[in-house]
Each structure stands twice: as C-alpha cells, then as structure tokens.
Length: 606
Image 1 (cartoon, one colour):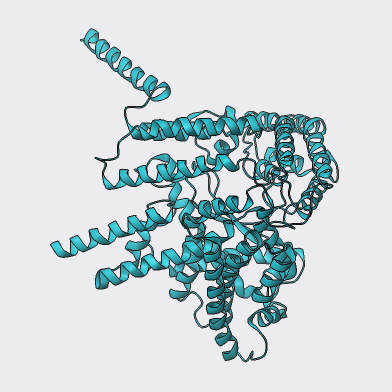
Image 2 (image 1 turned 90 degrees about the vertical axis):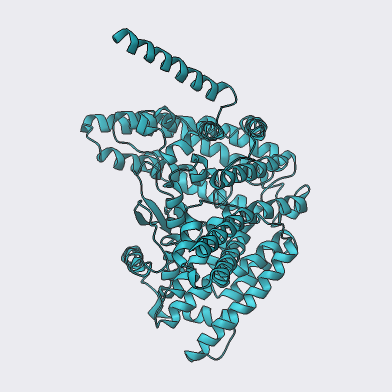
C-alpha cells in the first residue's frame, strides 16, 4: 500500500514540476497562469512596489525589502523589451471561447499592454525629478510610510536600502542627463522647487533627518533591546552620511547644472514632437480619442454650467455682487469657515475629517452593498513635501492587511481647508471615493491578480469625482447650502482643469495665464492654485481624466436607469462598477451594456 501511495506521490510531483517549469520558462498552458506570471515578473522588477503591495511577506519572502528600484536608462529599456515579449506570448492565446469575465480580463490586459508599449516612443519625455512626484520626494515618503521594521531583519533591510540610494540616484542622474541631451529639460521653476525640496531634506544634517527619526520611531515599536536599537540607529546615521546625503547632493548639483539651459515655458508642446506627445498623454489618461480642442471646449461649457448653479446658491444666501470666483474668494476668507493657523488647528482638521468619514458611512445604504474590508486613516501630508504637494491624495492599503488606506490632507496653508469643502474632499479621497474603489479592487476574488492593481486614471479619478455628486444626491449636505457650494467648487475645479491643462500644453498658455484663469474662476487661494498649475505642467493630461471619467459614469448610470426602468437598482450598478476593477472607458461601457442586457433577460424570463 505504501509503495502504491509513494508511486502516486511521485507522479504528482512530476506533474507539478512540469507545470511549474512550463509556467516559468515556456508559454503557460493556461492564460490565467500566464497572467500571474506576467504580474509576478512586473512586481519582481520593482522591489519598492513589492514592499508597497505586501504580496510576498505572507509566504516568508522578504529579500526585496533590502533593495530599491533600478531607475537607470538601461533598466527602462529592458522593461520595454520585456513588455514586447509578454505581449507576443499573450497574443498567442485565443479569446474566442472565453466566458464574459475572462473576455473582459483579456480585453483589459490587451488594452493595458498596448498602452504601456505605446509609451516606448516617449520614454525620454517627462521629468523624473519634479516638485510633485519626483524621486527626491517619493523616496523619503516610501521609507517612512511603506518600509516596515518589525524586527532585526526589517532593520537590516532598512539600512541596506539606505545604502542603495547611492546607486539608485546614479541611474537617475544619468537618465536626467540623457533627457537633457534630447532637449527635454523641466522649466526653471520646476528645477528651483525641486532643489528647494532637496535643501529642506538635507537641512539639519543626518542626525535630525526624517529617515533617521522615523526609523527610531519604528524601532521603538519592536521588541529589540535598547542596545540593539542604538546600534541600528548608528548604522542608519552612517548610511545617511555615506550614501543618502551624497546622493542628494549629487542630484542637487545635476539640477543646478540644468538651470542655464532651462526656461520657464510651461507646456510640453516645446519638447521634441511635443504636440504628438501631448496627444499620447491625453489618450493614456482619458482612454478616449478626444482631441485637446474638444476637451478644452468641454471644459469651458462645464465651467459655465457649474458657475450658473453656484451663482443661484450665492444669490439665495444674499451674495449678489461679484463673479463666482470673487464670491468664492470672499467666503474663503470668512473666519467662520477657517481653522486657527496653529498646530492645534491642524490637529483639529484631521480629527474633523475622521468624524466626517464616520458620518458619511451612515448615508451609504441606498447606494452600496459592497464595502472594503480595509480600514481608512487620515494623516497629514509629510511637512517636508507639503509646500508643493497637492491639496490631498490617497494611498492604497497593503494587500496583506498590515497597512490601512490613507487619506493624506495637505495642511501647509491652513486657509486652503475651509470647512465648507471638507465633506467633499473626504468623499473624494476617502469614502466612497478612492478608498472604496481602490481597496475593493485589491480585495476582489476570482479575477487575475493584475486586475486588482491595473491603473486607469480616468476610471479611478472619474469614480472619485462621481461620488461627490452621488453623495449630494444621497443628501449628505442636507440643508447646508455652503456645503453644497463646496461640492460645486470641487466640480468646478475639475472642469477648470480641462481648460488649463489643454491651455498649457496645446494652446501654449504660460504658467501665469493658467494661474490667473484658475484663480479667477475658482476663488482658490493663490498658493493652492500655483501648486495645482505646476502639477499639471509636470503631469500633462492627467488633470483631464477626472471630469471625463465622471461624465462617462453619469452617462452610463443614466443609460442603465432609462433602459431598466423600475428594475434599476443603484446598488446593482455600483456593484458592477466596483467589482469590475479599474477599466478603460470603452471596456467599462461594454461591461455596463452587458449588465443591462442580463437584467433585461432576467426580467423577461420572470
């Protein structure tokens, strides 16, 4: 009997070995295995992404936590070669006999890979060092918010990563120089702001640096002895002195050397084939074929429509003199809507955001069945980066549940956080905006792993903006006209983005023209507007995705409601949208059409 069992085990071992070898080195028998292999390859090439996702730690695999991403030109060239190889294998699978779910996965993977491969032509365009998401900013944030130190191994990996900054920045600096040789140089104000951030990071020396103080905080939460913690901190300070600080100083010198070649021209039209590059970025971010001029005209129409609604509210509240922008600027300065400009005031903002999120949850019943399992926290944007950071942003939870989703609020200028706009911002960045969409996407079962993480900006940002209107429809603002003005101001802000992004990059507006237009039409503070416009300058096309995505979601919801009539259930619609994961708009429309058809068939059968 045991011989028989042993024989069976041997056969199974051989079969498993064949499957593993096939999956790793050859075309997998199953397209689902291929998807997982492609996803694994992508993440293995990015140790920082692996740390962020927390995919492998549950299996006791953590060596990637000692390494940083390779930012060299050579590594990027290899990534495009890998993409071409992956697509060639993918194309050899047939989709003709797939079920609906698998067909959608096939279409999404196809769209995403083609989108990524299209970027090869433009791989030297863009600015890897900039005031918004440049490496000089994102790397410290990664160390502080992503790298976990639970024991001596985590501490050892932290030290290794500090030393790795030196080589990472060598690749980065070489990349910047190669871009400059192609006349791809950031505007002067981008270089200046990035250099100021580096100066802020280096100020105070290694002993007071954020990467050391945050490491001390992490060590304090472990069971390591005081002597062990002291030793690790000494090693960290040495790494900062020998690797991190010199790397940042070399980066500073590289940016300084570009100042003589740089100008303040804002739009990417100035770059080689700049107009074609911008069209590519619009396609990337909107997943549509809309032209820059069509998007610009849409923005102007939306600005006029939203301002008319706001003007009516202002009139009802006794504000009858001035443009919408002037009236918004007026109430933005009213003391009743502002927090004190103190540490206590900033702490109160964070506390109030948490209370608002708790309140929002009580309104969700009529619209949602599905909720994310991951928690949501509210934190302040790190102070070293907040001057040039956006007003708020969301960070997805770790897939292993070890880190919640985080809504980061920028408290640099406290007057940028008037109370009447806080509910809307909490909806967008938190619940049911980004936290619902991104956390639920990561938690999806029964889909290939890539669909839990594939990013389509028009979908995620469109959803977040859509939920702002949705929560108004669910009566979140009640009888609060100023809260509704805050919502409309946020939508107006996204409509203005359509105008200024295309204005800067296609119609050759200057930075100052764009600032003047946005401030005149939104009533936002000058510091906030300046930060936003400089964001669009280094992220061409991204700002157009919000309104394009929102309008498509509203259109699809109206289509479903019209065709389904009394059988339409808002919860069903949102279930389909959220449980499909991030999608390009043409595929999202296909999914909703299939949902409508299925519901009609069920109704007919009944």
